[in-house]
Image 1 (spheres, rainbow, N blue to C red):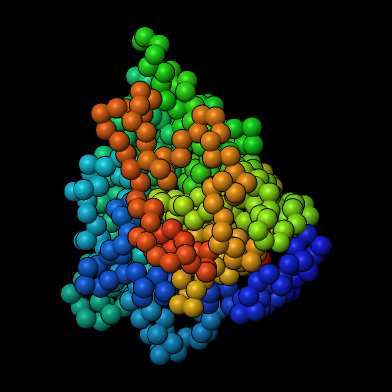
Image 2 (cartoon, rainbow, N blue to C red; image 1 turned 90 degrees about the horizontal axis):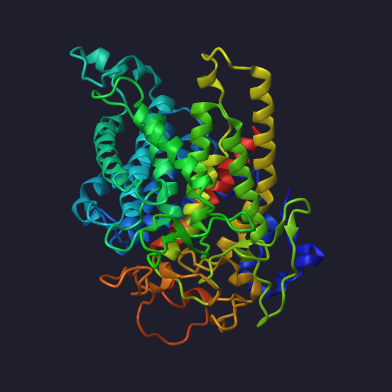
Length: 545
């Protein structure tokens, strides 16, 4: 079924799009490999435009956004290795070799980045910067295992990945070459998890992760979500010679971290995570988290989804999945999307009027507060890609294989949870598709995605400023430090200041394209486009199977 949403009364503004982009809104189908083609094109542009082989990295990225880029690229490799047969089917040697060449060529970039990653610098950065590294190398490790199991299943017998002395045995049982890097990925993830875990503090607020040890104590959503998701991912996917099976320390960290976060009062009336808590130092001896920063960012709603999914897989407790779906639905509502009607709540207005701001977007399109005005920092340009990467992980089909060995396993109960999860994720597809299509319209002639996905729906209007974007940027108890940096005061700290990545690329003529304002199109915005397209493809495939 073609995508005819823009013919509905709530969005009859197809004429606002430039003709070259209108076709997107009538052609893309959820059962078509065209979605995968768009996702692959986003990956190709990412690597062609922003990755430099001579430097083995994305040099315009900063440490933590490069780690996120590596994570999303590794995830896309998992998607490709499962899906390439749908684009170029066949089992002939030449087709298999072509598939392998494509996968391995991108994987080589990941391996090279493993050596180029500035681990000495990251070790001295904030705890959230450290924990992004953990998730990245677990993602790469999972891809390597998946690719090997799918395409080199005969090598499963060679558990030690050793070279057999007999040439015939070697040809028959040698694992895929990429699996030899798994111990290196494990080592990086383990060392950075141990570094990141040092941020857990019980002296203040009865627990929780501190964000940045060089500032006044601040326990924010993202660092705690990363700690939960990294910890449960370590428990699920990590094992080496020093651990017999899974390490219970990781599981305990994830459970305790989750319990602290959900009891911390860090969500607002809309069910969204606010940024975090300070400790009021004006009260002598105070150790409570009692000064809440109400700023809301998209990525604070996403990273926890991986943790919730992992905690369900390990414990079987359906409350983790229920919490995750509640959070997803709160986000969707805050973009101005009606899940039941499968359309935006508000009509698209003609420029220069913008649709109503709903808390995390407008007209059903996910948006950070800096998007429409083109004032996003390098940090904020990464946020939407992070959200969709973790939404993709959360909505994978449920697998009860790990529970069947438990005496308390109940197949009827599992089937009920499985059906409810699948049905909910299927209901999200209309919204995901809406965002994927909007993201596609933000591309320029070189295939580079912009930051503001909704620009095309409002005529690519460039004269939007913070004073006219419909958002209260001076709301009480909000500090947009991810775009403006931390203030030097008693709350954040007077001795030092934290600043985000660059907000601008220098002086240029006023652009005609809304997504050429500010930092313009970057490696971070390209990752965002890749992540939403991958999520649309993966989830559409999983709910239809």
